[in-house]
Length: 350
Ligand SMILES: *[C@@H]1O[C@H](CO)[C@@H](O)[C@H](O)[C@H]1NC(C)=O
Ligand SMILES: *[C@@H]1O[C@H](CO)[C@@H](O)[C@H](O)[C@H]1NC(C)=O
Ligand SMILES: *[C@@H]1O[C@H](CO)[C@@H](O)[C@H](O)[C@H]1NC(C)=O
Ligand SMILES: *[C@@H]1O[C@H](CO)[C@@H](O)[C@H](O)[C@H]1NC(C)=O
Image 1 (cartoon, rainbow, N blue to C red):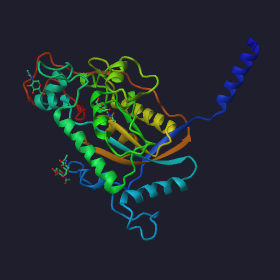
Image 2 (cartoon, rainbow, N blue to C red):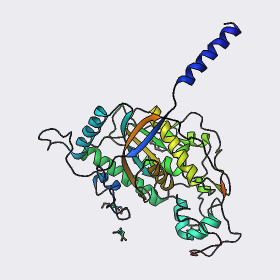
Image 3 (spheres, protein in one colour):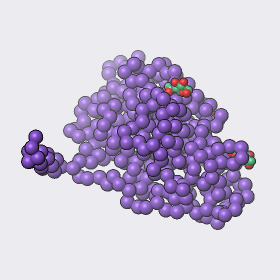
Image 4 (cartoon, rainbow, N blue to C red):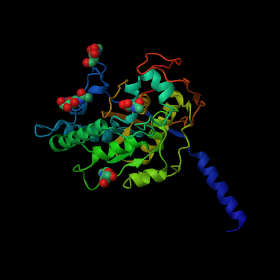
């Protein structure tokens, strides 16, 4: 091709591209299906394993005549299919199963030292002389929590015929990589939908300046979890974590929206599993318009999401620079109730 033709072709494609109106995705939580989004449910005492994942026992408009042979989850699956069938153009319904990792060494250290001392002194170190909490691994408790969630999935698949995830995503932090592995190992999954999670950078915990939120290299993740896919563009080393500095919660919500946009615009699945963190799942819930629902370590929350494509451009880039975190020069006493630093109440949870 001559240079002229190449240029003309380029110009034509640019003109074409500029004619495509920008589109953005809008999210809302569809209430009335899960106890977790009901304002009268007490999140603190809620246990998803004793409540069928929180799926409300009820009739649906889509229930067939004499449906007593179908479980609630089988009928829910029909209901979601029906919602999608009759949805207006540009609207889709998706079900997210979002799991928080099991207890990690950083959770134990925070409990041991107390949150003020943890936040201002210990969290910025890699560990103490006995344990490492940088990119924390699961503790024995965390492993048992993930194994319990695995048992629960087994019983839900066997007894409830729950729709299993069609795709899996995980944070790149070790505690989530491990939790996903233990949670979904050995389940009777359909051949079409094997457990082969994709590691996604932006499902990581709030970037806090704490070493527990600094991820391992791509090579480390690949070697430790060879069955996992790593998303395109994932950098060898962690480019987002910065010592002593953290992203703002405004920016965390922007990147949560960005990663959800990425998933929903590239993945046709209706049932999607995400293994992430308390702070990040809290951020995703905000983006989805779900009420506040804190998860204990190992807990899973399902959300029925309405995804609507509308005209317009959504902000996808961070709008604020990282802020410096406050530190103490000497360690506050173990379980000190205050330090020289003050934090908004949500800080330091991961
Ligand atoms: C929610 O449950 C927690 C733990 O059981 C309890 O301490 C709290 O009082 C409950 N809150 C309400 C509003 O009932
Ligand atoms: C939830 O209930 C199960 C079954 O009774 C129990 O084994 C588990 O410890 C409970 N989980 C929490 C976080 O209380
Ligand atoms: C290190 O931290 C853990 C808390 O996770 C604690 O049990 C242990 O005693 C600490 N080690 C030292 C030497 O202080
Ligand atoms: C989980 O990890 C173990 C140990 O590395 C590995 O043998 C197994 O294949 C993994 N399972 C899944 C489902 O990724």
